[in-house]
Length: 116
Length: 113
Image 1 (cartoon, helix red, strand yellow):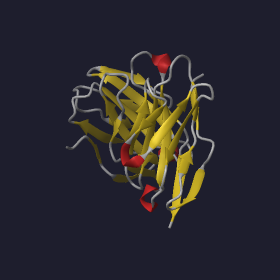
Image 2 (tube, each protein chain N blue to C red; image 1 turned 180 degrees about the vertical axis):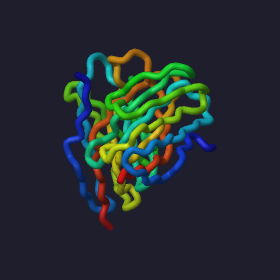
Image 3 (tube, one colour; image 1 turned 90 degrees about the vertical axis):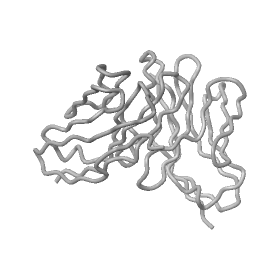
Image 4 (tube, rainbow over the protein chains, first blue to last red; image 1 turned 60 degrees about the horizontal axis):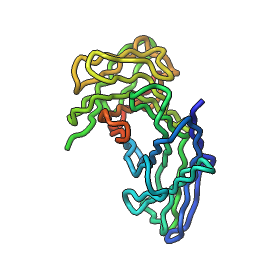
């Protein structure tokens, strides 16, 4: 079965420090991977995606993610965290078992808390 | 750009009442989705549609119905509301290209009392 796991419910970092939000996946075939961010009382906003090509992908707001096929991971990173990065982050993978429907399988979400 | 618009933003229902959550998008996307978000549970897919006149069940469809008469609109109907349907509901849309992200509305916060 296809799945996405975000092993940490919450990540705490100090402003200015690097941050990592972890994601691992299990899919058959090549994965299409996405990161979204959700601010309070808002919908999910797309940050970045990995479809093919370079393992390091860059996205919005200075975020990047590293695709590692051997470890089946797609960790979200940022070199220097901002207090405004505090939010709920979701990793997702395209459901390849349902044909071309665009369906996503989401992880449980990780709350990022950046302290001043 | 409006994107994906959901109405209402908040609603309180009594057990057994019915209501329709509205969702409309102005991006001419073929694909549309309804999710519910419960604390610590991520997003669960309720129903989805790959085009006007075509809908299909997701992971948690019981207690809900949908229709897709136009490309723009994808309303979600709750019949006989139950406390277990208290949740935040999100509508999303995406183009037909598999590598394109989904675009989300800001959600409807629904309480069933």
